[in-house]
Image (cartoon, rainbow, N blue to C red; front, top):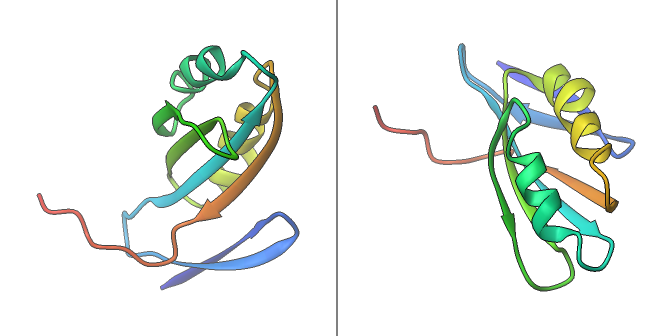
Length: 102
């Protein structure tokens, strides 16, 4: 079965199996000096698998394991965008991947 979700005004098809999660990476830009606090705050949000401060054009990279596309776009992403110090987000849904073992 394939599930379609809207991200950044684009329809994205996300392959999913029964009981599978919808995964996405969220690239985040923050105000100067706010990345560490933002990453720590984001790590506490339900659905966030990892939240790490990085260097480069983005300041934080987040991996999300959402229960479905609606959970991703209506619950997890809006909570992340409300974190103080965040200036921009880019959501990249995983469309293919290697199944987890175990």
